[in-house]
Length: 123
Image: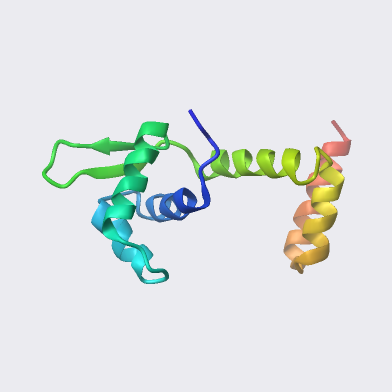
């Protein structure tokens, strides 16, 4: 299973994760609110996602319903692995420093990061 969905596939997965399961029309209508997306393009992307094992398709009803086969966490891990190996050449420190340096983290996020690191060091 390819756990590294493309950017367009991630947009579709975000909708499916939020809704649970949905038709191509449901996904297309939501995508069309924020971008110029053709119905046939959405359909083709979802068929490719099915072939890749990212979604399953229920064909028992007239309208086919799609459901995610990967979790948000699996997609995040796949994307992070790809970014870490290609952009940051495997340096976790560079990735974290870049992320924290470019985006303002809230106090709660900083506390969560500190707690994670404290737990990581005690292992």
